[in-house]
Image (tube, rainbow, N blue to C red; front, side, top):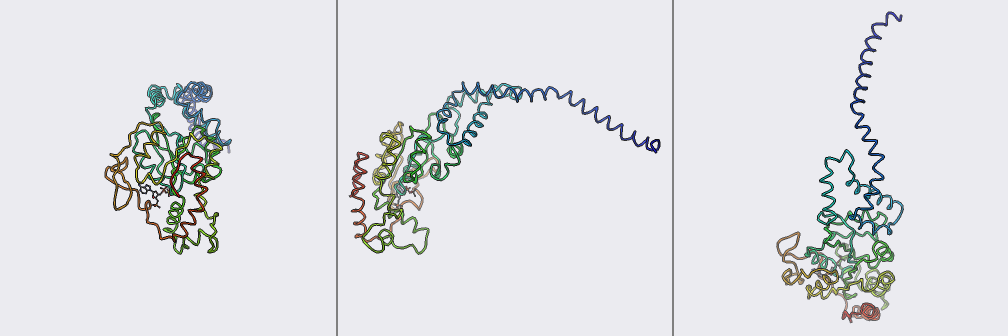
Length: 370
Ligand SMILES: Nc1ncnc2c1ncn2[C@@H]1O[C@H](COP(=O)(O)OS(=O)(=O)O)[C@@H](OP(=O)(O)O)[C@H]1O
């Protein structure tokens, strides 16, 4: 039997031996590559560690390190550190690119290469105060870069961590300020502590508007999206009475003093700038000048950037980064408000008066809402 199988065994054995020889040759040829790979694995860690210590570009990250929210965030930060630092390593695989990588790193260090950064200034509110107008006007400044839409990091997405937040930001040079606006920050109780934890030096901008008009504006926005919306007066007062329903969110938001008191437990007054929403409409340059000064920027935005659009009834832009032609904010900004019973308005004014006075005291500014 075995003798009969002999020729078949030979037929199999020969190619198998041939294959083993081929693999053996391949391994010898590539032993250098395998050595390099194992070398990379052992060398990478200490190199990264040393590079991190000397890499000034990472200073921005280091500052934020104590504020890492949780273990997952810490892990992510470590990973991103390793990724950044690996550009410095001079191992064989990157030897060819080492020169350009080093140049890239130097450009980054000198702020000549844009990179995404966490914001250092926030427009925290108030909703319907004129926050979009303010941000769009500020964007005219070459030293300001802002996230386009509301990020809601500190209220809705905090769990996602700083890495997620930073990636929502536009790339900036070291000479530029990163900003974002999310009006709900002002009224969300956990936000001041979270912001302070991330950056105790954060600059905070608050655009405020007569709380009664603000509430009507808020109501108008909801009404525009909903059919069968009850009347404003029916929502603002309890069961047709004269008692203000302070649990109704559009009214709660307007008690600015209460919200500000909470923020002042975490930030000194000097880190706030209070912008008048009314003045932003009638004299945008005056308010924008205050903001530029507050942010320590050159006064670049001025009269030449604006025109008053009589049809819209608001200041509009002659040109912006996005559009080279005159344009106003979208249709959902500057809506006409529904008719509200003047008696109801007066009652709300009376309700807000003591809170407004307290707000004026806290801010040292009289906004003239009576
Ligand atoms: N230049 C210009 N153009 C249009 N609208 C302007 C402008 N400046 C301030 N405003 C006022 O901004 C109000 C909307 O505020 P916000 O942008 O903060 O609203 S939101 O919270 O982001 O929804 C919006 O409120 P309504 O008038 O109730 O629509 C405007 O009064």
